[in-house]
Amino acid sequence: MTYDEFRAAWLGSDDPDVKARNKQLCERYPFLIPRYEWSQEPLEDYDYEFTNLDDLPLGWRKAFGLQMCEELREILGDFLNDYRVIQIKEKFGQLRWYDNGIPRSISDKYNKWLDKYTDLSEETCIRCGKPGKMTTRGWESPYCEECFHKVYPNANYDEWTN
Ligand SMILES: [Zn+2]
Image 1 (tube, rainbow, N blue to C red):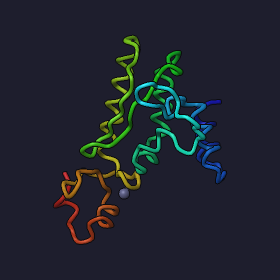
Image 2 (cartoon, protein in one colour):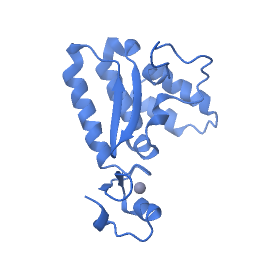
Image 3 (cartoon, rainbow, N blue to C red):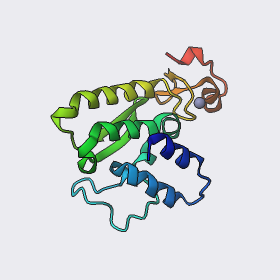
Image 4 (cartoon, rainbow, N blue to C red):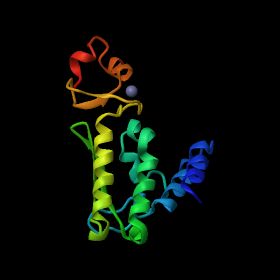
């Protein structure tokens, strides 16, 4: 299945069964299967209730979550099934994606991929996925103007963004 086919089917699905949808996701992107940090074994009794992608803030997930996984899948090639994600999170308003390493032969492509999405995360609203700016109010996070006003109703957007 091509990415466009997968994306259309996955995003367009009105299947309310989140487990079924997560299973499709994990079959295409096995690195999204949650594992124990030290043993690297899949979680006991794992039933696709959630995936590692759920750790990506919602706005970023909407804006580039799937695209990011697809590009990584292509870069990994034969290493796909041996690649392990350790942790996905946000820190200082920026995406952090930790894994257990990649072969040297793909490190250039991989580093470009990670830099691209780390930069993109800084200018993508963490709440809704629209273009945003880094706010210096409260926790450092990128917000679009609309979401910023929902979170800080009385603050001036330009005054509090970089
Ligand atoms: Zn927003």
